[in-house]
Amino acid sequence: MRRLPALGDAFAGDPGADRIVPPSGFTARLTQFTAAAMAFLAVFALALSLAAGRLADHWGEALARTATVRISAPEGQMATQTDAVLAVLATTPGIAGARLIPEDEQRALLAPWFGPDLPVESLPLPRLVEITETAEGMDAEALRLRLSGEAPGAVLDDHTRWRRPLVEAAGRLRLLGWLSIGLIGATMAAMIALSANAALAANARVIEVLRLVGARDTFIARAFVRRFTRRALEGAAIGTAAGMVAVAVLPGDGAGPGVLTGLGFRGLDWLLPLALPLIAAGVAFGATRLTAMRVLKGIT
Image (cartoon, rainbow, N blue to C red; front, side, top):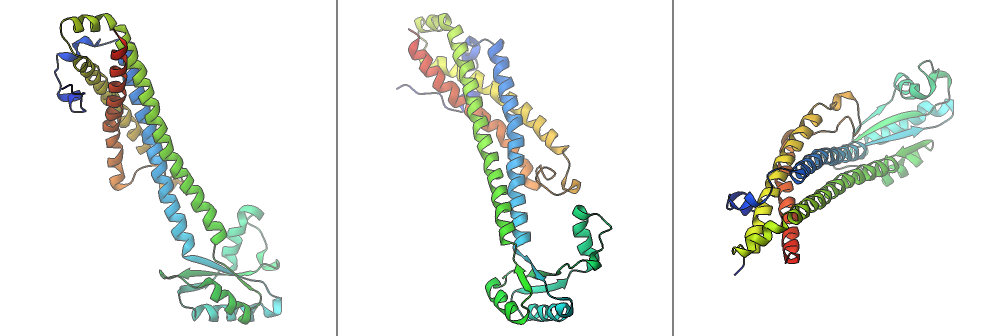
């Protein structure tokens, strides 16, 4: 019964069988270069996907546990309504703390748009109260009803309209990273298949001679699978190492907030790129085996 080559045969097969494959030439260089380049890009795609996932979790958690009450009232009623809002918040379940934002902090928030010398005290700006929620959270609708009765000039903003687009954008960026990894794998499979096809075509006469002396197609295919899988493994290992070094020298989180400054691996995440050479070897094994069996059937 004919047995197709298995992945283990790529490393534990007959070492003499792969002598029919040219040890050098453009197919060897193309396979190794393709595997190295694709693995290098896959490291960055993986880092981007993980960073986007962390960013989505951070934005979702940070904005989900905070809210803001904006108080707009005539000058004579501002202090009264502010005290009423603070009193309501102090007795609302799910609120861990409420803090009235002072004028200097409001000035710092507005400075990027209006400059550092903005006379906040002379402008009819609303009062802002920052709310920190507990892990259980608060009932936003119930709080809005209470505020409308106690302080008509108070408006609750639970950051829902800001949180949802940010989390969705980060989630789509994470999905884009995984999609990029899939496209990189497909591109590598196509390039290795082309290289294997070229090597098989170049050795058509050698294959005919091997058949005449009794070699079976599975023996011949195993030789090509073994050589191309090893080339892909070596190239992917080099590309992965280079990619990990490049990611390691990128700016860390301390350089500023955002997905680009947080692009990298943390903790056990550094173990994930180590699987890329094995994945590349598996892709090369499958692509070469399918190509070899198809081409061998066409060689008479």
